[in-house]
Image (tube, rainbow over all chains, first blue to last red; front, side):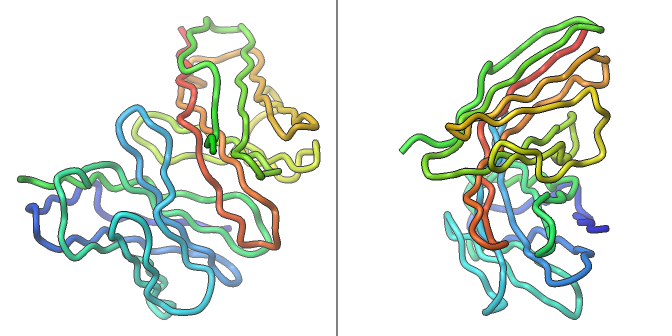
Length: 113
Length: 114
């Protein structure tokens, strides 16, 4: 079985400061990892993914994520947060043999001006 | 280039009724997945359709069924609605090319069961 844990329900950060949203996963086989963002009353928008290769993945809107195999983590980062980054962030995983994404419970990011 | 579209946006039904939700995939995509997102939770996988067949199914009862049409669009049907079926239903499309296909989501259909 595959699973994702997002240990923080909410992350608060001041505008201009770096942000990190944490994600750990469990999967048999090689993990395919994804980050999505959800704005109020909207669907999920794809931010970035890790399939293979460099452990640091760059995505949309200045976001990046670091894959750490030994710690089974895939934390989302941004060097300088914007108020407009305030939203709900979901980490998701699947292994190569399955098509279904398994999502974490989500982390609400609040960026204060 | 249109993204994934879903209809209707909102729907209100009563217990015991049946509902059909519709999804049109992103241009060039051939695979449709459906997810249920209850309030305050992450999306849960219902099933995936490829080449007009159900390719994978999550832990949902048989009341949930689907269909994919030759133009790759898809429907989700839910019979004998329960209060607990109230949720945001998300459709995601992807292009099946090996195992690295990325799923792109539509805006969702908000179903309320009274």
